[in-house]
Length: 125
Ligand code: HEC
Image (cartoon, rainbow, N blue to C red; front, top):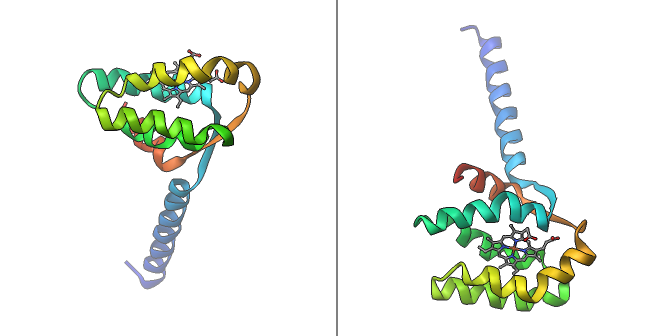
């Protein structure tokens, strides 16, 4: 391969690497409802079959998407479930307290989910 071509290849590889890591570092905007449907529900199905990794990651992240004055409570609910190993208990505990009001008033509220988490969850579906 001649030198010029080699250099072009190196530059292309570099740009490819930069854009790949950029895609990983960004965030995707969605709503809590869509995230629950698209990722939490399938992760819960997987957890029931014994693979808890995806749901554990979701429960660690979910407090970040709470309304500011509910963050502490959401974290408590998620942490309790993670500590007990009964991950499914979190669904009911959070939904019975917060889902109705959230749905009514914040259905369209955007949340930012890290692309790193999304690609992890996509790969584990
Ligand atoms: C810490 C809070 C929290 C936890 C934990 C949580 N959810 Fe949710 N979930 C919500 C809220 C709030 C909504 C309503 C979002 C909306 O409609 O805008 C929701 C909505 C949903 C929906 C959409 C359909 C519906 O019923 O309205 C599904 C499906 C869902 N959750 C599944 C789950 C599953 C499965 C788990 C447990 C493995 C879980 N969620 C745990 C807060 C939570």
